[in-house]
Length: 161
Image (tube, one colour):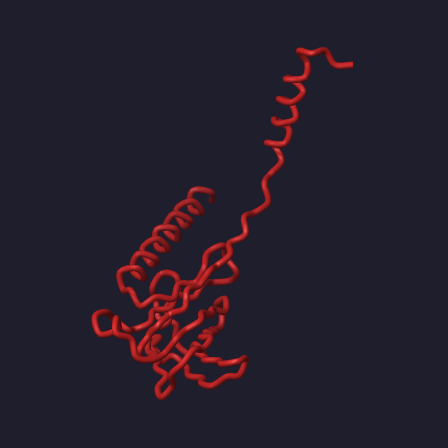
């Protein structure tokens, strides 16, 4: 039978043992707000801001594809003649699939801000979420962060060789 003074040590030992067990890798749940644009046009880029040519940009409504276009050599795309609520899906070889809900149609705010959609695709199934935005500033910040990460991982790999 443990003595009264041994109980705190037992609890401390249990906490210490549990702290040594590696925590499971955190799961990132990407939550997307519905994008709102007056017309659908934009650019698809990789995590460091380079254009992704020949990506498939697909609009779906009720699970049915209503428009498919491909990005040009500069990663640019445009879908015309559609309005309403859709699911925007983008696929490109070597990248994780990306999607976001989107409303296309008149937007009072669109008069005062850019309506060009910027999409950042991710390589593989990383811990980050792809970026869908009409904000040039927000997109450029994400590119800067990714370039710094990439540079840091390159430097780390170089020192390990």
